[in-house]
Amino acid sequence: MNIFKYNYVSILFVFCLMVSCKTNSATSSQKVEEIFSLNTTSCMGPCPVFELSLYGDKKLVFNGKENTEVSGEHEVVLTDDQFESLLGIIESADWVNLDKQYKSNMMDLPTQKFTYNRKGVSKSVSRYGAGPESISNMSDTILTFVEEQVFNK
Image 1 (cartoon, rainbow, N blue to C red):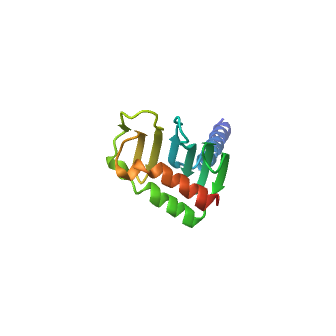
Image 2 (spheres, rainbow, N blue to C red; image 1 turned 30 degrees about the vertical axis):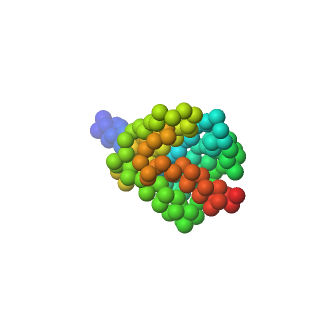
Image 3 (cartoon, helix red, strand yellow; image 1 turned 135 degrees about the vertical axis):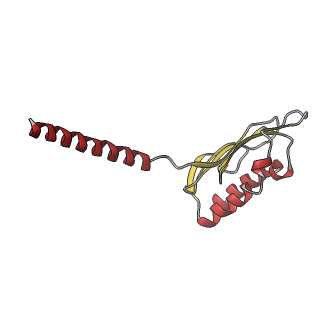
């Protein structure tokens, strides 16, 4: 009876080890965190419409929808210099102190939706024609950087 009891405990112990190993391997294969995203909407004129996501592993996903030099969805891994330059543009905004929404009374402007998640700061900001200087031209600056420095257009 004692041998059966020890075998039972041994089998239970081995099972627990297998389960914990499986959990650890699943945890290590988690998706890399998105640092920044930017989505723009259309207007009646030639406003650029695109989606952009930047990840911690230096992956950039860009989807040019309308009025951009780069059309369609593209995924690239940025060089160290490109990654640092793009982060410099993004982090020029004072994300901690930005409001969640900025809105102008003007008509026919694109909406820009920013998300930032880095250095303990997680923020979503929507902009329609208004807002502080630190984000007012960010969409255009990022688009120019991506078209010229990443895709060489």
